[in-house]
Figure 1: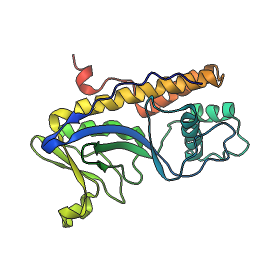
Figure 2: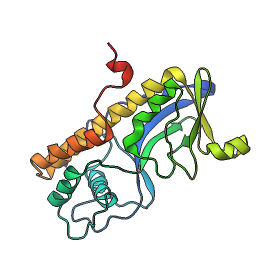
Figure 3: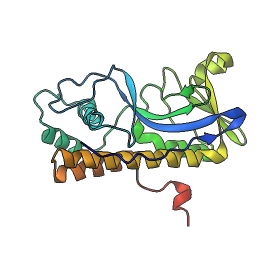
Figure 4: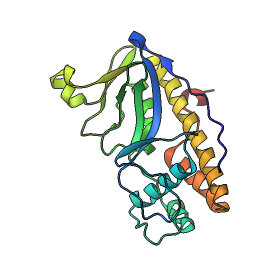
Length: 229
């Protein structure tokens, strides 16, 4: 069993009583029953938040999902072989991104199709007036105002009829704190992956998997504000 030390997460107060949270999520798009190691049962498609709440079976699910998403057949692949495939990949792309939600009103904006978790830091570009890629169908997008960002679930539909799409407003001064919460969640997820690797007796492969995830998803490097002298 993997011991957990759950990180205390913050919800940040926004406009009009919003209680904003951001989560790093990957979309499990297809069943992975062929995996030869324990994986969590899920109904697909589904969003899986990546943090230190993840169980050992959910880490196994993420590993199987990543192997399949890179184009490999899970049938007959052992866990060490699966880890070797991930370590050898140039990039561990995965559908997903950042899920923004207002926990007070049960409203959320999720990534669109073809968005990838590996691009989560593009949200920082909003501070320079540039749009991050949030996917399509629905076409999530951001409307820029002087001191806040309006994040639409379907920006194309909203351009025709604003009432047709849900949205959340993110005050500009809260964007980096929200992204730092995401970064800390992902760092905590790496710790869980490392513990899972030790539990599965993966040896050096476990550490190499953590390094590969960190490199592909740009996790541990400080965000721009924290990196500034």
